[in-house]
Image (cartoon, rainbow, N blue to C red; front, side, top):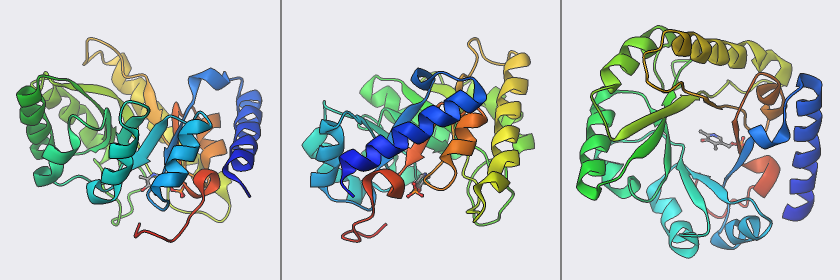
Length: 232
Ligand SMILES: *Cc1c(COP(=O)(O)O)cnc(C)c1O
């Protein structure tokens, strides 16, 4: 299937999920996760109008960033080591994997050096899987309070990954819990501005995530395919 056809399919499924849940399609943004595909495929996605690109490792993202800077918005969706922050801040407008203060510290100092602000999602390990990164749900509030010290970091929302389920419906409680957590935090008015965003939903479960309030879905395989030409 061509990328154009995959995009059309994804759009139909997104619109149906919106209809089922009374949401507006404009409130959900597709991030094309391009870690499994070539520069050419990323360029094709951008030509088709998908201008938000997600990558999880800088060495794999570099060629794509060089080819597309200025034409696309880059999202860093992978776990981030503090010594890699210098590669990421200033190139990726969004970081989806903020989950510890040492990382906030590194982002802050790099952002100060470059005199910019970085929009960050707090990654939360809702499922409790030990293999997954992210803050424990109960730790998000104290983390957010500490984060107030870092004036270069703009916390825009929460991010999670659901476990792979052969029946996607099984992921619903995870996404619902993330939305509830965001709403609870906003009610506590810790931040001057509420966090509006929820980065959740991947190829297998994006429709459920949209029904539960996702504002950004991170779509790899279902949208741009998997070319096996690069390591993941
Ligand atoms: C790879 C990846 C995705 C996309 O995965 P697909 O299942 O191919 O859609 C989304 N989010 C994160 C954090 C990823 O690492």
